[in-house]
Image 1 (cartoon, rainbow, N blue to C red):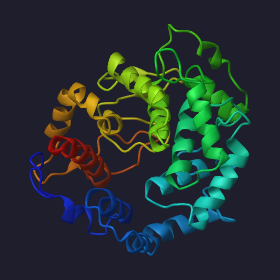
Image 2 (tube, helix red, strand yellow):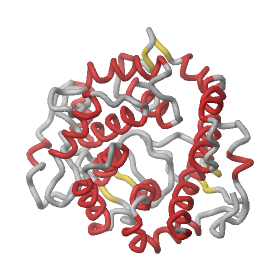
Image 3 (cartoon, rainbow, N blue to C red):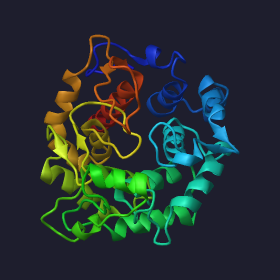
Image 4 (cartoon, helix red, strand yellow):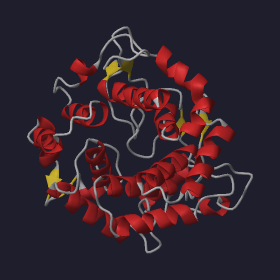
Length: 326
C-alpha cells in the first residue's frame, strides 16, 4: 500500500500470517481482495481458530463462571472473535451469541453487566458485534432501538449503573446493583465517551437509516473535544487515556478508533485534521504504529509496534485518502 502519508509499505508485514486476524482484515478491508470465501477459509484454518476452539466450554467461548471478565469471559471472547473477522457461520460465534443474549439482554434491548440495569458501553459493544457477525434479527434491532431511545441531550450516551470503582467491585463481588442511573437525566453530568463510542459504532454498523442520531453522536465528540483530553475519569471510576493508541475491544476507546468512525462522513473530516496529523506523527520509520495502551478492554499486546494499531491507522488513512481522490 503506497500512500503519501506512509513512510513505507506495511502490507507485507501485516499480511505475513503472524496475526491471522489482521491478515484477514487487511486483505478484506485495505486491499479489497474479493475472494472472501478463500480469505475466510484461511482464517478458519489458522492457529487463531485453534485458540478459540481451545477456549470453548460446551460450545460457548470463555469461562461461564465469569461472564463479564476481561480476557476470560464469554463477553470478551465473543467481542474479540467478531473483531477478528469471525461471523455467525462459525458455530462458536452463533452459540456464544445465543448464550449471551439469553443471559445478558434485557427486554428493553439493552445489555446488562452482572446484576445491573442496562449499561451503555456494554449495549453498544454487544449490538455492534451482533451486527458485525451477521446476526440481524430482533436481538440486534432491539439493541439499536435501545441506543436510539437512550441518546442524551448532549448527543452522547451514559446509562451507567456505577459511581466509582468501589461500586463496580461491589456489584462484581456482592452482586448488588448501584444507583448510578440517577445521573442519566442530569445534564450537568456529561455523557461517557466510552459508551458514546460503542453506541455510535453500533449505529454506524446498522443500516444508517438513523442519520439524525448518528450526526448528534458525532457532534457530541467534536463539541466536547473528547478525543484529546489527556486523562478523564468516567462515571464508573475508570481513568482512561484516550490519546494513547491501543485497540479497543470491550468498554474501551482511543481517539484513533473514534476518528475512524467520523472519517466515514466527509463533512466532518475538516474538523479532525489536526488529530489526523498527530496520528501520522506517531508512525515509525517502517510505517508501523506502536501499542501504547494495554488497559483492560484493549487487546493486550506488547508495548512495541502493533499489527492491530497499524491496521487501525491504515483504516483511517484509507478512509481519508478515498475521499481526497473523489
